[in-house]
Image 1 (cartoon, one colour):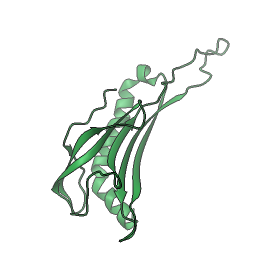
Image 2 (cartoon, rainbow, N blue to C red):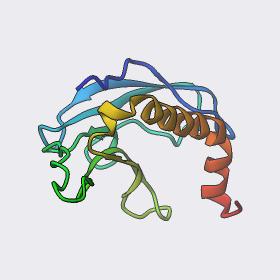
Image 3 (tube, one colour):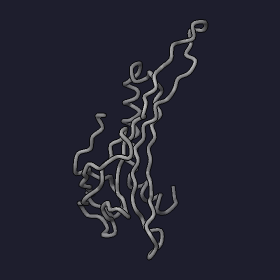
Image 4 (tube, rainbow, N blue to C red):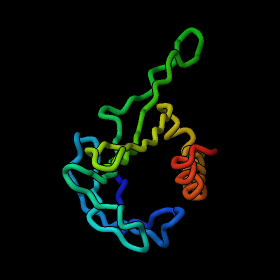
Length: 156
């Protein structure tokens, strides 16, 4: 797997955060098909309530590839068409311990990006897969502050 994060990770722009960074360390993923990192320190200017990963309040990022990659099946000999095009599902998962109400136990908030890539397209159309990822990451970076605001205000 070539997905690899280097430390520190520069965070996206957020209201009240100035040049946020996150020092990460390799962590044990829940399965052999994943890579996980835990946040061990924060940098830049962030509210003091932002904490790093701990047992009760994890702050982790996990990348999972499909446990078994699906491939294209042969075309129908009569019609010459593919009968079925399975998807390979890749996911990013960020877990962060949060407090739902002062004095209450922590709960886990999750952020997930799921990528469903049709089998065979990795060979037949890799440039358009890359373009999709480029737009997704660019849009997330561009919308970072607004998304944070929206999740806290409920206003789109």
